Length: 214
Image (cartoon, rainbow, N blue to C red; front, side, top):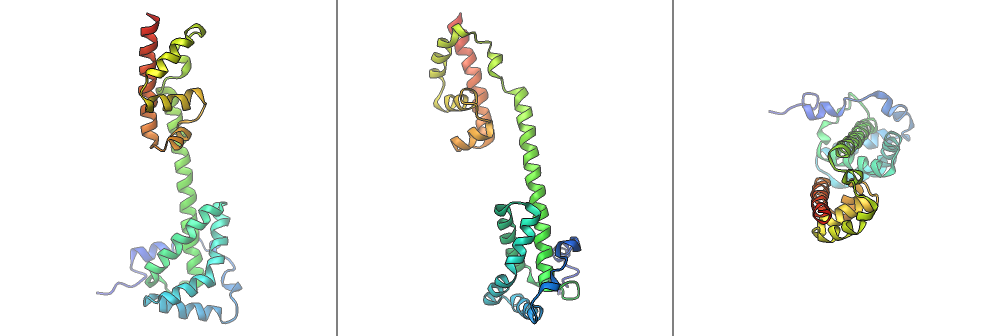
């Protein structure tokens, strides 16, 4: 049984965006351009790679402008455009000429994916802020170690007794002032791993300092 594009949930999702995303797009197509794009999408629906490359060449610049306007980031926009055309290639069957021009359809998909990217970036930033606030309260601060100036030599000795991974994590975050995320990137480890090393290192540091002070 063949499912029509309008009944296909994947295809239906591709058209659920605002018309403002493609305002004026069909009015800027060169004479004969719309017919050319219609012929090309028909070939793409049959799996013609040459037609897809030509479709990309004719429309990608406008898709890039839409993506950049939404994301305000050339890097994110480039990713969005790549994702858009991969989707177009894989789901060319979803194009419905009764709903939009070929260019309008491509730009609607671009706009939707660009909005999704902006939301994903915002969610990731909020997660980082929550993690930072949570770790500020759960990971001991240097002040919590209550180390007086005269104990500095004991701290240096204690640092040398940490494992290498603990030493690096504690040194980067406490001595050099890097955030946990920055330290994780510098050490090439996941953020959760870095936080565990910092917690373990600070606990070990406390224990060593306590022994030295006793």
